[in-house]
Length: 368
Image 1 (cartoon, helix red, strand yellow):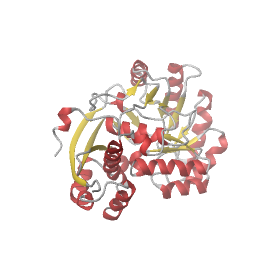
Image 2: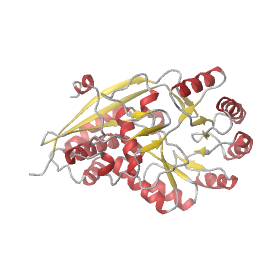
Image 3: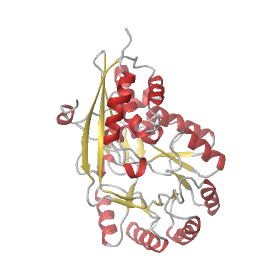
Image 4: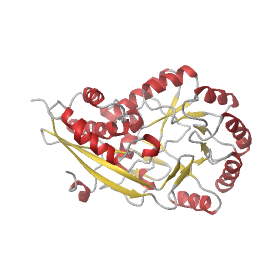
């Protein structure tokens, strides 16, 4: 008898970020997150876990909307269906609910986790890999003056040696912030910059020229997400351009490729709608010569584990640009029974089945 979906349970978790690592960018401060954790149970008793990592300001989704759609729309559409192939279940979710990729990604991750656990293999293996067993990572630096100094000191204490600076908050302030970050980090340390779409075209041109003296490794989302022509024009400056907010799903990626608008695309499990779709988008980007890295929406432990498995399952992943798998460091506490193997320089893939991690026992008891 085929293994089928027997139940879907959820639990909400709200956590503050570490005060000394709070990210402040063009879209505001990310000082806490409300998560919806998801558990899928199959007819043979296998459990799979996922996480909805969404913030209303950025994605238009959060734990409240995710819980409503998962319990009232997606679960009724999935119950009783065979677990495999998981891709078919993702199509069922699309037919039941428009948009909401982060919500679908949390449930999709739980389905993939259950599928891989049933096979007794890591999720990266179920997704077609692994092509690597560790991923280099970086951390965002933000704030000004003493705030920036404090964030940098905390990041270094946590083990980080590669960084990106939040800019897009006005060119004069961006110049001062990047200058101070370079002074703190020293020459030769990996230091990129992320504008979160906060610059106009004119500001972006001025900023890229002015900031060149601080040897930035890249500029991420320099202009508004829909301004692909503006991004394409900036590539002539010779600085690698990363597309983040410009690319959610496959359609966005196709438009980006056609516009020749970026050197690198920042892939998210959440933006893509799940682990399998993120890997598929990475393959499409690679086919057109666009590099990939794993970006972050401030994922917690389960989301960070999903990021890691996707990164390891991608046939092509940037080796020169670290990814943003930071969940083990960013929050005041960890929800995992055992944390990911991360030292701030890289995060390493374990050998356990599925995501290879579980929520803490006190959290597992709260699922309903």
